[in-house]
Image 1: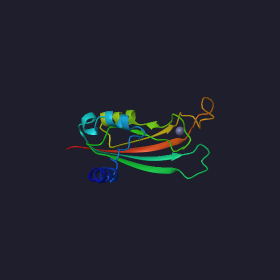
Image 2: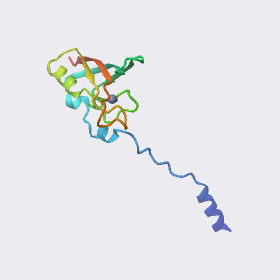
Image 3: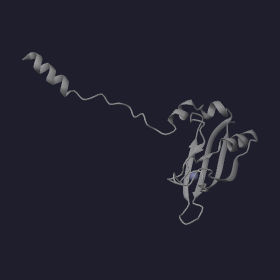
Image 4: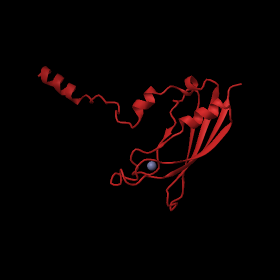
Length: 140
Ligand SMILES: [Zn+2]
């Protein structure tokens, strides 16, 4: 009887909760160095992005991202085309160049070179357009 009670107790204990394992890009994030490591002189960095569809039919999607010295130095931003395959915008070179030149801002335009959707892969590029502005501030 005691044995049975013990077993019942054990069975009623909650299952251990597994941490979520599926997160896109997490492995890359884990590997990425911090902004402070890559750009020691940088105090703060903000990226303002406006991404719009090639037909300009929908309102551009606006995103602001902010980075401090402890943030991961990962500047690969997702394309706003939900069906996009292998697209996205990596602004690491732009950020690097701006820091090297000691600039306080940098602007630019990029066109997504992914594929429009899975069916069009290999035929039709995504061509969503990113306009970005990077704001940088430096340590004294
Ligand atoms: Zn895209």
